[in-house]
Every structure is written in C-alpha cells, then in structure tokens.
Length: 450
Image (cartoon, rainbow, N blue to C red; front, side, top):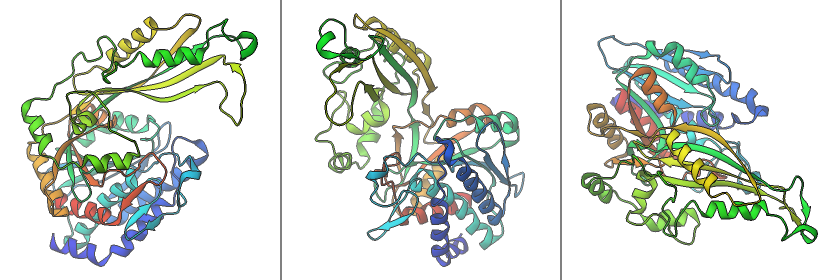
C-alpha cells in the first residue's frame, strides 16, 4: 500500500481539482429543473470509475440513473460493494450562503464550502480515488469490488431499488461500505453500528372554507392555527418524552455495555451546542446528549404552515393549518405501527371546530449491526490507519433507508464509515468539508481495499 499512498501524495492537487469539478455540477434531485445537471454528475462518476480501472455503466430506470461498476480480481477473494450518491440537497435559502452554493470555495486554511461537499460527493469520490491509487500503484485491489452510486438518495426516488431488484443476485458480497455518515469529532473517524429509522406524516386541519376577517368572525369559529398549536403541544410531555400511547413499544433499550461504550467516546457538549446556535441543550431525561442523538426515538415537527406570514399585518382567521412530522426510530420499532400510534393520538386530540386529514409519508426501520465482526474490525483498522487516531464506535442519529434495501436484496453486512467532521451542515446553507478529510477518506479506501 505504500505505493498507493505515494501516488496520492503526488496527485493531491489533481484530485482536489476533480472534487471541485464534481461540486460545480448542481445535481439536485428534488427539483426537476436541475435534472439535466444530475445526468452530468452521473456521467462524471461513470468516467471516474472507468479512469480508475473499473467496468462502469448507467442503469436507466424510472428516474435519475444509478451508476454501477465492478472489478473482479479473483473469485476467491472477498467481494465488497461501495454505495454512494451523486445527488445533493436543494441549495435554498440562497441568501444564507456566504459563498455560492455550487462554486466550491476554500474558507480559511482548509474548509471547503459547497453544496454536496460532505453529503455525499466528497466521501464518494474519495472512495473511487482510493481504489484508483491502488490500481495505479500495484495493478490490482485486494478485494473484488462493486459500485452502486445513485442519483435519488436526497429525494427518495425508486431507481436504485429497481436496480437492486433486477441485479441484486449479481452483487452477492461480504460487506457493504457506505461513507455517508460523519465521524465522531474533528479528526476522529467513526464506525457507525446503528442508524435510526423513520416514519413521516403530514397533518392538515381545515376550519372555514376560506380565510375570514378576524374582526367579524374571530371568537365565533375555531382557528385552525390555534388548533394546530394545541395538537402539536400534545405530542410531548413537559420533560420531552413523546406522549403518544404505544410510541415506545419495542424500543431496544441501551444495556450497560453500550452505555459504557458511549461514555468512553470523546464528545464535546459545549462545541456541539455552539454549532447548533441554540441557547441550551434539551431532551428526554435519563439519557446523555450522545445517547439522545443516536439511540432514542424522537417525534419532530419539521414544518408549520398557516395563515399570513408576509410583511405587515393581515387580520384573518386562516382557513387551514398544516404541519410535517417525522419520527426517528430505534431498532425493534415498527415504522408502520408508530405511524398508526401517532395517527390515533392526533385523531383523539383533534380540537373541536376543525376537520383533520393525515397523509402517510415514507418509512424505514432502524439499522443495528454487530461492531465486533471481522469486517467491522477491518473497517475500524482502516479508519484508524488513515486518520492516525483510534476510530470511535458509535450510533448515528440519521436514517439511510437504502441500507435495508441492500440488506434485503443482497444479504450483506453494512459498514457505515464516518470520514468527515460532524457539524458539516449537510442539509443547510454553507455546507462544509475539510480538505484533510477528503484525503483521509482516500487513505481509508486504500487501507480497506488494499
């Protein structure tokens, strides 16, 4: 592997230039006006795989294409799948970006600012370039490798699922590598052994048929905005626990071993709070901040909408009020059962004078894997070698629904490796990714696949 590391050293600027070229492509999957650019990003990934030494092509399903690639060194060697995505979140609100979202800029000494730099273009390209370093230096990899890099991760599109349904049997592998989670702290990589699941819903309350004059009608009919505020308040008790009957059914509680492991992880609460901009930490009693963010279920309001919110005053009783809710779930919780429980709670607490409609959204179960398997240890060793710091073993608070799709289609062990610093603002303005994390991501691939 020394030759591969030397190749990286000689090509750092060229590889950084490639990353910037990738980041300039506005491959937003959620907005159709960007789809031509998403196709450009798919072509970029395909070209990079071919240049690195892989067979590569596009799977054209019912949406944006999935890039696939492979290199079979020897059927007797282990086989690994690498998953990533080339699509990115929408850049809005644009006015909050300190530098243009799709013109990558280095701020300070080494902080890259651009949409998609951390989620997930930087880590995905780092995996590709790490294998390129190995192939250029030693002519081969130490494993057989498949690539599945999709263009609809950020919008929940169906194409990668269609690809796996058609080609899953061809992808039988020993491990699935996903570099779409953060490290534990700056300069501290992580192997993530748990992801929270998800269930989503949207609630609409309707009162009068149209917005009404608040002087003429106020106090005589129910205000949907007020009703929504009361409804939302009913979802939690004063201590922050979810007050929905049956919400905690099946929750996998933390045992003493896991709590001790979490307690040993370096975690700077003051820095964590500073990054949020919030005045204080808050959450379910009886658990640390680290436990709350990765190992406890939540019920969050993602958006509220009702009435008039423009400049100045408009004295109305609004016709409608709505909110979007997502519940993050831990292993052993059933997303469909949680949806039914939340729906029943909302219906039973609906104030008089309004009618309610509930729309069911996307769902995914949580993921929990054994962090002590052979492949998990290999991943931790690769991260430790690349960073020069012992890799943490931790849970991630977010959801990656595609993990379950892979597990069901291919029957593979997922390895969720965190190679970038947390606080990356992945779905917010001023997304960031450190230059050294990009190069350490390449080194991780070198150590893992060499």
